[in-house]
Image (cartoon, rainbow, N blue to C red; front, side, top):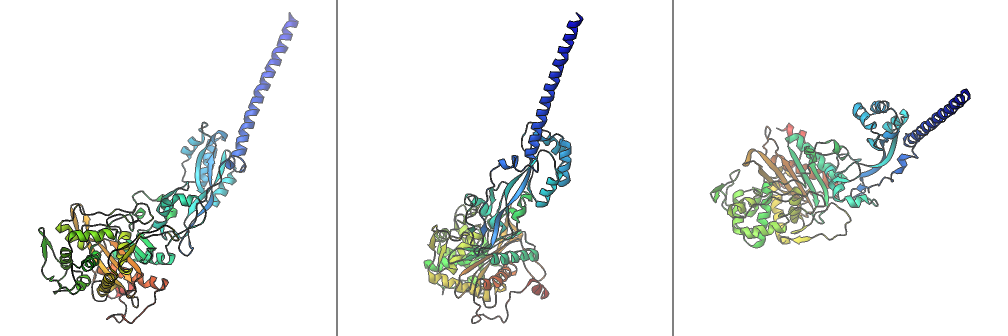
Length: 551
């Protein structure tokens, strides 16, 4: 009996030994597997999990017309974790927060404790210093993924044109969004018509106007009228595409006011009305109009902002910016022919510019007598600045307009339309020159560069009507007047009056356009000429400091 008990005890001990050995083997296997995860996913294990991802796709670069780099892609590291390979989530979380203090340690600990998940993003787009700091922590369960990230080396320059791309490389705004598929395919750089030098000068002067006139927003366009190429397109406030993700969804900087917004631009429409009247034969250049008494249409009284001794010619209607005279031209033109020219100019639809969100115009519900009258001088119709710049280009292109573009070297056909005859376009250009030399656009004059242009001041629409103390001020110009080639349009939202200065376009949009032309003309190769300079002995375009010193 004793022998049998002894044998039983020996067998039981052996069984327990085998069970303990099996448990230890399982334990060691688990440890080995866990260690394998750590080795594969850890910072030093770049041959493991991190290489399971596909190679980062590189978007094509974006360059200006001269090859200046505007947008490119760089490779960056992004940090992830495999919670299954992390023994001590609290320790790992604390270490990561020491590198990324913006992370919440409790939230991160919970995420790293979720053993049901094999992949958790920790931080995208690490800087080289952050990458090294995490690597040096030598923490378990972490890995780096190499990704392609979009950067914009010129920061705010052409920010609204370029737009921006998201963390995963998808285009979200501007050219990045509109041509996302083409850019995503990589390949040759996408070349824009934008001239970085012209763009910089345009943005700089728009920023100066923002400070001097305390505007709520603004837009500027520089257009080559001969081929429709946009050389500069700016919106204020500016946007830095590198930081777009930090902006609130309603941040004013997100709006591209040159393309995505519409404005009632006021009297810059008057040359169009007069051109239509002359080209259709409704009026003659030699006709005269009595503008001393307001005109009443459908019970609405329409007058001028200042007394204009009459009778006056169509040229004086433009240079003196007479509402009364323009309405009388519109009445002789007729609503049907008025609509025809506006439609032919492309102002009844969104601009075909290659940017998403190009705004549709706001048109009158019907063109009865009163609406035809107000539209003739730019009220009751709202269009985007890029659409109007394209329409105004007919005065610099012998009566033809061509669809504007921001893409260079495009093989696609763009529509060219004749709107008025070449003699009519030339005649209106002379009127616009008179408006600068001897009319409301005097502060846009630039020595030697023969500016021809028109001011526009429209009361700003508000709920229930129009504001009494807020304007949309604009100035549309072509230059050089004797052989026009370029269009400049400036639009300022709610400029403020100051001592010695009103808030109409003559005091803000006109001098801003003049300063733009003064700076870009040499860059565009426009030769100065002083043969037909007019009555001024020196240019009226002066720096902000110079003008303030004279007030």
